[in-house]
Each structure stands twice: as C-alpha cells, then as structure tokens.
Image 1 (cartoon, rainbow, N blue to C red):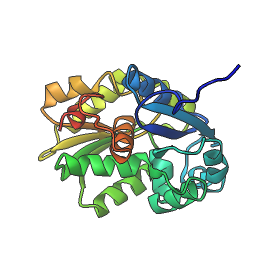
Image 2 (cartoon, one colour):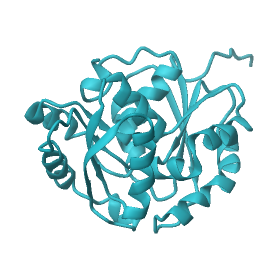
Image 3 (cartoon, rainbow, N blue to C red):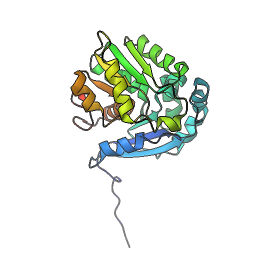
Length: 243
C-alpha cells in the first residue's frame, strides 16, 4: 500500500536537548511548557558523575559529540542543558562540539540563555540562588560579571550530589529567592541549575518581590525558541515570556 510523507510530528520549531544523565527536572518542566504547542522537543542524555565539581563537569566535554549524534538531523536549535557544565567547558566550546555533528543548528546552553534573558530584561544587579558547591558557583558569578551583570547577593544550598538537587523542594528555592530579593539595588533574580524545580514558583516570587525571575530551564527554553524563530510570548512562566 502506498503512503504519504509529511514534515514529521508537530508544525513548529524542532528543538533538541542534551540532558544530563542525573537530571530529573528539565524534561518535566519542558513538557509542561510545550504541551499543546506546535514545537517538537527531542532529547538525548550525556553521562555525568553524580557528584558535581568543576572536574566532573569538564569531563562532559569529550562526551558531547557522541551525545549530540543521538539527536536526529534537521533540528532548528539544540540546547546543552547544564548551566555549570557550560560555564566550566565554555559556551564557545559547547557550540563547537555540537556543531561538529549538527552544523546547521543554532546552539545554546543555560548560562548563555540566562545571560541573554537577564540582558533582555535590562538586569544589571541580581540576586542569585544555586544548589552548588562554592567551586562550581564561582565561575558562574565570574562569567555573568564579565558580561556586566553584578551579583549583589548569592545563596547556595552547597549540595554536590545532583540526585539530591533534583529533590530540593521548590519551597526552599522560593525562600532563597525571597531572601536574595532583599539585597540593596537588586533588579532581577536568577535561580541556576536545570535540576532545580522552579516553574511553580516563578510567578509567585515575581508577584511578591516585583522583580523578574530567571531560571535555568525557563531561560534555556525561551532562548531555544527565539533562536529557532518561534514566537514564544506567553508560552512559559514569568515576565521573561511577556517582555
């Protein structure tokens, strides 16, 4: 019997994610955001140690091409989904590694996306919350600082085990963000890490503080949609999707 071909599932942007083996949050939040939308989200996994240090993060560099090769061709945008990993490896290197397999795809990562989101919102002085050890948080502060974004307040849960990070209750992150908002002159808040559960607290924290809230997952999906040429107004939580 003859058959007819179409352009594949969905009618919008074709997005790819390279997700950490230890991440239990990003795909859940992404599915919630993209449900009933035309965008197609495909994902693969990359090996990573359960203990997150600069050394274990750097090890993902060598594994990135193989992980990217598991995604199908023809994607509009690909996100390497690790804020701290992209910082340690370097956003430029991440792009090079992924484009060695997918040369036509736009490439981003959570730290590049967060920087773009904060700049889009006009943020210059932020309060930041992370789950990381100080050795992992420091390079993120340095990268944002080099981009003209001052870290006015920084709070960390100091949890090295990424499996436990996936279990941090959003109420804890909410409390940390509200505390960070008290720092003088803060004009935005940033919760870093794709394994932190944040989508249910973004609008609430914004309503209480009057400040825009950017999170790794929110910013990554926002940036991927923009790079793919998809109008994403109102798709996700927070002022970022309304600005």
